[in-house]
Structure formats: C-alpha cells, structure tokens
Length: 256
Image 1 (cartoon, one colour):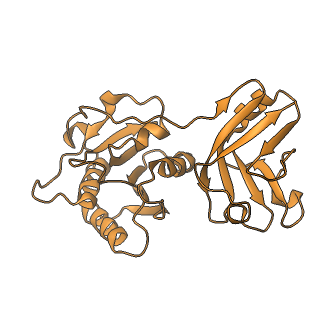
Image 2 (cartoon, rainbow, N blue to C red):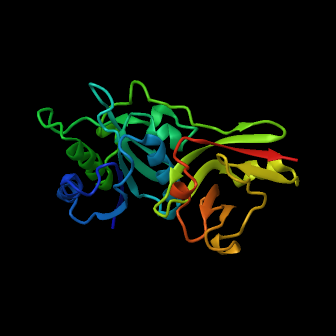
C-alpha cells in the first residue's frame, strides 16, 4: 500500500485538508494517508522543513511526501516533484526543499504540469502528481525539468572558538524551545570545557540534562532531544511562556 505523508499550513478549521485527502483518494483509492501536521505556522517554510527533516527516516522508502506550505508564494507559483534517497517529494518551488536537503540536484526536479489548465486547484495538482508516482509513471511524464530550483539559505549558528550564538527555530506543543544547534557541533566547540547557556535576562544553564526529570518541577533545563537538537525546557511547565522565549530569538552559549 502506497504511503502519502501530509505536512501543511492548512489548519484544521477549514475544508482544505478534506479536499486534499479526497483528491488523493480519487487519484488512487488505496493510498495510506498519514498526517504529519496541518498546524505549521502560516507560510513558515523553515518550520515545515524542520518537521519534514525529522520524519523522513521514520517512513519506508517509496513514501510520497506532500508539503503544502506557503503554496501561493508568488504571482505564478510553481509546483515540483522529485525523488531523493528513495522517497518522493511534492510541493511548491518556494525553497522549502532546499532547507531540508543541502545537496539538491536541479536536474532531478520536475515541474508538475496541471492535468487541466482550466482547473488550477493546488490540491488537485498535488494529487495528480502523487497518483502518477503511485502508478509508476516516470517523473518526466508529470512535467518538464524545473527551469530554476528555488533555494533558500539555512539559518546557521554563529560559531567562534569560545561561543555559539544560535536561533530558536521551533516551539513545540508543550512549549519546549528548540534551538538550531546539533549535538555534534556543540561538543566540537565545547571541547570538554564548562559552558553557560544564556537566554534573555535569566540565570544561565550550566549543565546538560538527560531528560526533563533531571531537575525539580518548574526548573529550567537544557538537553539534546531525540531529533538531535538543543532544547530548552521547564520540567512540567511551559518554557516559551514562562521564560518569554519566542521563535527567531537568539540564545548564546559561552565556553570556559
């Protein structure tokens, strides 16, 4: 059974998700549709890339991943499909996929030619591409090579020999704060030294925890989560609200 994952900024209030799913099932009636999230912040391709990059390896090869985030990004928006590492991807050519993969080969990316030029509904365009892929058609039959693959720069931490300045990239459902620092980078710069993690005018965090229970209820902590990113949290509380931390703000780590 063909798996299709959905990551969108549609929200759950309107009919758009149902329309997309119905269109997919019209294209192939035995699709196994899995919702990653429909609550991506509106137009936020960075958050969408974060979600997608963390779920790809949980799916088997051959899965079709549809990313419907910031779909109308210019007057004549383009929609693309491609295969990467045994998975298929469908979505707008707005830079989202360049934030997931830093080694994209433009020659493998194809525009999705709308099945009906008079009917340019985005959900139908995505479903058409998914149906073609599921029925084994080559991507070249879905559309021509993309004339220009839209690439965006990934926000990277600023690193010196004694400091990392990083950015909050995600606030999860529990209001835990995710920072764009991977464990490998942290340990490389740390080099077995002590550190102080500063986040606004709060007392710095000076040690890494293994999980939330390592500190008393209500106390702050930092650890590397299952996705490998640095996370700032409060045990049994909401770090974002209580510590006044928001997406795109900076945190600083000093090493001694």
